[in-house]
Image (tube, rainbow, N blue to C red; front, top):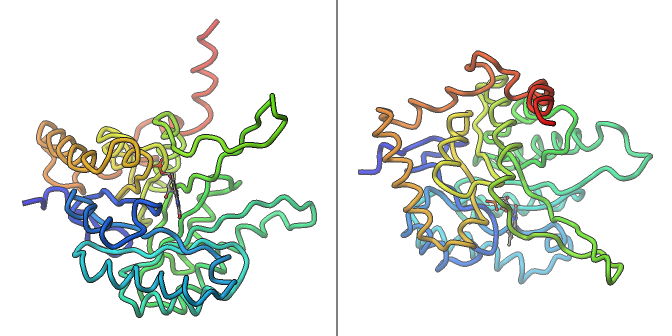
Amino acid sequence: MEKILETKFAGLTLSNPIIVASSGLTNSASKNKELEKSGAGAIILKSLFEEQICEKSENELNDYLNLVRETKKHCCIPVIASINFYKNDLWADFAHQIEMAGADSIEVNIFAFNTELSQEFDSQENAYIQIAQRLNEVVNIPVIIKIGKYFSHIVQLVDNLLTAGAKGISLFNRFYQPDIDINKLQMTSGKVFSSSDEISDTLRWTGIISGRLPQTSIASSTGIHDWEDIVKCILSGASAVEICSTIYQNGHEIISTMKRGIEEWMHSMHFNSIEDFKGILNYSSIENPTMYERLQFLRYFSNRD
Ligand SMILES: Cc1cc2nc3c(=O)[nH]c(=O)nc-3n(C[C@H](O)[C@H](O)[C@H](O)COP(=O)(O)O)c2cc1C
């Protein structure tokens, strides 16, 4: 019945492009079952963080493997495990155990910035590529790399990640947002949830990567809050989306509302499948690709007094 929304991402077949992003929303099998009932196309389990692997807390590792097993037992949709790390190598063995526990795929969220002057210019990029390569050696399930947007050459990074064996790329991870309390003279935490206006960079890079590297299987993420946002991501070249903030804010019901919205729009536009409109507005498909670039900046702002 739902075939019209079917899509493939990172070698997985999803009944629809809505993936629930890694977060507290997906930290128990019962919640995951509810997300499936609400219509999610796939779920990405809450991440296991490097610190948890390093501390070798057997309980935490076992709990995570149980989360994978239990979720797989109760859900039919693809279950993607998630690990979040930035330096150590201990995760490799654990990634293998995650595969054995039944995960359909594994997403890696690498959280790191270069802040040391002594770090090489491309050390960050190389670390990502090595992780993708290593992970691809230790597991047989598809590897998804979730990247941030703070790179000088995202196209080349993604190209290298694909060569290293990544089957899917998630654009983008949203980092913890620092803020400053000017009265207490203290660092504080900024907004936990994204807002709709954060979608522009997501669209820009989905469109550019899809145009430049059409073989990339992309899940857009960050700032996707309604069905129109999902349609925009697919038009710019995404195969799927990973959403989080909007579910926290609007509840699970937003998933079926989104699916209905996409379906109705597809009918009105005479599209019969996601493939019919995927990427038709990406960087290489539009007449004026500078729309994705900075050039527009001049025209956009020069008309304002
Ligand atoms: C409360 C919360 C917890 C999150 N936990 C994780 C996590 O464990 N691992 C991860 O990769 N991303 C985590 N994220 C990031 C989300 O997966 C997602 O990439 C980000 O929120 C952007 O999507 P959105 O704009 O739809 O919220 C978390 C986000 C929120 C709001």
